Length: 210
Image 1 (cartoon, helix red, strand yellow):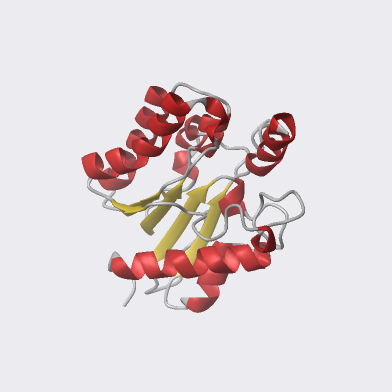
Image 2: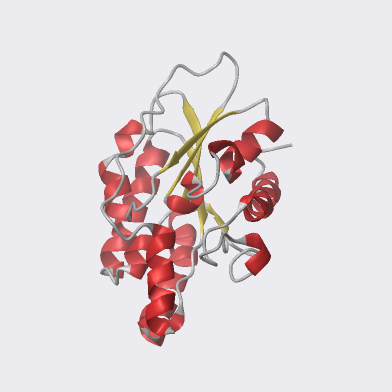
């Protein structure tokens, strides 16, 4: 059972070589603020059509924004930091950051993961880009100490860097069979719809949306 769970989790977060980041750079439409979603396979929309991933659903709801999906399946915090310049182009106003899951599932040094996430946030803030952070959880197989440190990392970073925190990106979706694909892990279109609704509610609370 444990090995099957770990295999499913590997499929979820792409515990394989990271995909190359897509070139999403393009001139922003006049007068529209640009919001970039940065993440891994959950944001990229692994296993669903591009228009069914939660960033695309939000783009359809928010025509006043230009929304870009910078999710890359298999990405770690280090990979995202390395490729950050692809995403933080001058016209970007907002970044929603949902990263770190692959770091946790690979058992990477969480002090380094934290450092990477803090550097990403700092890079955004240095460009006057507003940032919000989404929390992620990993299964208890990695031991209580590591799992607790991983989950505590997100509120601690958010507090230290002064950014908004969405406590858990997969709230209401994780572990719900009807919200996930056949592997029981990746959100299906219905799951992405729930995520989109939760992100929209959170960003309204943050004051990004009226």
